[in-house]
Image (cartoon, rainbow, N blue to C red):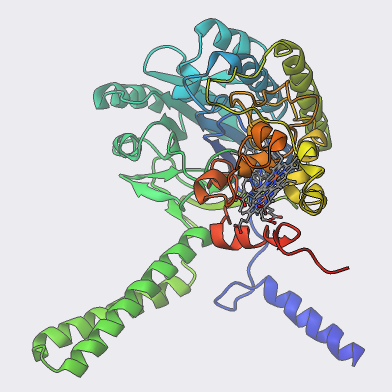
Amino acid sequence: MRCFLAILGLALCLGCSRDRSGKKAAEEPVPDLRLVLVTDLKGYLEPCGCTSNPLGGIDRLAAQVGTLRDGKSPVVLLVAGDTFFDTSQLAPARVDQAKRNAKTLAAILDRLEVDAVLPGSTDRAQPPAFLRELSRGTGFAWLVMNGDTELLRISAGDLRLAVIGVREGTSSETLAAAVGTAQAETDLTIVLVDGSRRDANRVGAIDGVDFVVQGGLDEDAPAPPHRVGRAWALHAGRQGQGLTVVDLYRQKRGEPFVDRSEWSRRARVEQLARRIEDLASRIAGWEQAGDVNRADLDAQRARLAELERERQLLDAPAVEADSNSFFARWIELPKKAPRDEGVAKLMRKHDKAVNEANRVAFANLKPLPLGPDEVAYVGSEACSACHQQAYAWWRNHAHGLAYLTLQQRNKEYNLDCVSCHVTGYEQPGGSTVTHNLDGALVNVGCESCHGPGAAHTKNPEVPVVRDTPESTCVTCHNEEHSDLFDYEAYRKTLVVPGHGLPPLER
Ligand code: HEC
Ligand code: HEC
Ligand code: HEC
Ligand code: HEC
């Protein structure tokens, strides 16, 4: 039996080195170039960790880049779009933290040996003096900090690359001139764009462009490569949730590239399958109704057969060994993806530094004063004397541990985090990043849902909010931080014996 399994295993294993046609595939040839792309990073060192499947983390991205630099093909690492900043308009109180974040990110990108960055509009909106300071410490090219276009020449293995950065809204004439200039002594032309799909389309329409790397889309998962003119547009999602890798095989200069990615093939198969299913069901409907004329019905049947043939063709391997081709794939970075320990260390150091800097900088940031009819917050402890059971339940509920979640990560003074993990944040008589009634307002306390309780605590006849409306929950449970939030389902889990239900008998 064991022997049989071994043979089966061997057969399965041989199976993996065969392509779909059943021929044994030759040893996978080494790509002439490996492009690694990151778009719209938006200053994300890591995801907040609030959602059900957090993606990203620059330490995971770094580990992946390390794996991709396998020593076989030359690697060119390009970054485009909003990179160091999430927003163009920083509130004054946030400037310091955002700058520290940008510096840490720039240092890490440098360590990853990024070749070039085309900063996006959020980056360019920052004061020029700061951008100069930020770029001075880095070894990579910052494209188009002035003007409309900028050309960077990179040699990678046997290939001479022209990497052109283009600013949003640049005219087609200027673009064409820039691409034209780059053509001499160039084997491959890659244009980095920050802008809309239309901007990418305009670039792709220009003769001589092979690839357009699209920044500025601000979309989660990227679509597979798509044609723009003779070129291919590539995109790598946002916030460092993953990266796009393109392995290139270049046979002839100036010839267009063929996309041989499984990623693209699967997307086309899925799209065709949907169209086939849709048409087949419509034909069935017409056949049943019997009121469509024969010729029209035949025409639709022929179209269906054509689509099915198309799908079969997609199943056959299109080996065009003598043409320029590429394989693109998207590598997502889930929680379980390996991390680069060195980079993770820098991130932890950064978190501690930000925490400490904010603790000091905002030491005197007092809560807003109470207006005439407003009631102060008192903290959950103050409710415990009269609502023991509710308090005991809450203490061990996620809401009662929300601040610990931040403390464990050195983020309790982080301006990106604190607002939803404490009570009464920036409310009159509530809390600030540093002031929380000596800890009484940390965690998502009773008053986050029942409203400020000073008056009720003194005199229980003064009412508080009994049932919490959805609008209160979603100030924290928004789409970005609570992807699975469903008011009814979530609320039900809060209504337990001692809190909304009669206490259990002893
Ligand atoms: C001194 C005792 C006392 C304290 C302290 C106290 N409560 Fe109450 N609370 C009561 C009493 C008594 C009631 C009325 C019970 C009833 O009507 O069933 C009540 C009722 C409530 C209700 C239900 C309101 C309603 O309309 O049915 C909520 C919610 C509530 N308290 C929340 C809180 C919160 C939050 C705190 C802390 C900020 C708090 N209580 C502090 C005594 C107290
Ligand atoms: C002030 C912000 C805030 C408000 C308001 C708020 N929550 Fe939460 N909620 C949180 C945070 C933060 C967590 C996660 C805490 C942790 O684990 O560190 C959480 C966790 C939860 C969880 C636990 C989820 C799990 O996977 O275990 C439930 C359930 C929940 N909230 C329901 C609600 C409901 C229902 C409301 C409205 C009635 C509400 N919350 C209002 C911030 C809030
Ligand atoms: C807009 C409000 C909001 C902000 C800002 C926010 N969080 Fe959260 N966080 C939540 C909510 C709501 C949950 C619970 C989500 C759920 O279970 O559906 C949560 C859950 C979490 C969890 C999961 C806890 C667990 O035990 O599963 C972690 C970790 C976390 N947050 C960390 C952070 C960090 C770090 C930041 C800052 C980078 C941050 N949060 C900023 C609202 C927020
Ligand atoms: C995330 C929101 C949330 C938090 C935090 C929360 N509650 Fe509630 N509370 C509710 C909801 C929802 C109900 C159900 C109301 C209903 O069914 O009418 C409720 C019901 C109650 C009631 C009235 C029902 C009863 O059992 O008599 C009291 C009292 C109460 N909560 C006290 C507290 C206290 C005290 C705390 C803190 C230790 C607390 N709650 C924390 C949302 C919350």
